[in-house]
Image 1 (cartoon, rainbow, N blue to C red):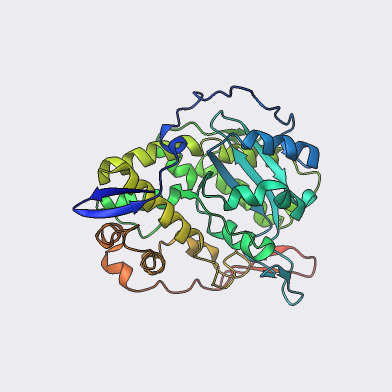
Image 2 (spheres, rainbow, N blue to C red; image 1 turned 135 degrees about the vertical axis):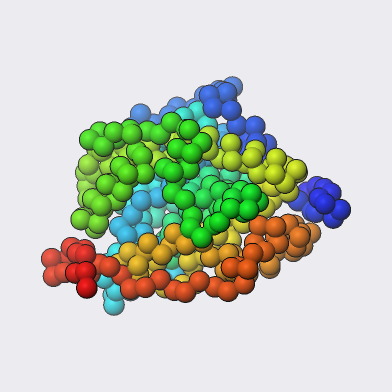
Length: 348
């Protein structure tokens, strides 16, 4: 724990994870390198043990999840509700490291055992930073399916909102990862049949999810879907480094910027936990792209002022639009037919 001065106030902060600020792509090497899994998707406990051994040396990783209409879905507090259409299941967990290594863990095959063996400990640890991009549906699914409450999160989507607000730009809507990567000229991965995963190509892939709502549950998974999932996490650590340094420059204090992101990302990830399911089958999920500063500010106002000074909070969440919550999303644009397919509702 350290005490720093920020704009005339004393702020009590935990020591910042040095790996988060010092990340330079390709610069890290182990004294004794553990054996990596040789597969792109991990579906056995043996390969998972190898991955966990590798991750034991990491202080910052990128994380993402894929699932069947991911959010709380048909689960509430670890129990599956028979009254709900079966949806929301976590199928894959993707992990990327500073060395450019990325892999998917098959949660469909390993089930709760994957988390029991060590993934839950990593997700809930403050000592391992998890770089994510819009973790709200993922956190909702983790909490209600497995009782996992991730900590130590750095959300690049939220960081972009703070940066735009500090520059007095509008933030009515959040940005997708592809748009952010393109704006910082960070090279994105390619997927067979789609090419470079631009925002347009990502939309094509998401249309495929809509046409087959059980796509992520199918085994074996199509090779291009595994490739898409893994490529999604690879550039996120580079994006995090660039954006965080930009935030430090705007705030003038590295520790304060770090604490803002940790507290903010934690609150942002928890946004859907107490709401109705926010997947596309339960509401108009396109409305999730709206930024609700009111709800985020409410959560962050509960943080002790020694950790998050009120005047700092007002700089990023003090706009007029943050005084009232957004309206709830409208009804879903899809329905599940008798063949268990998700079908778009006819346009009225």
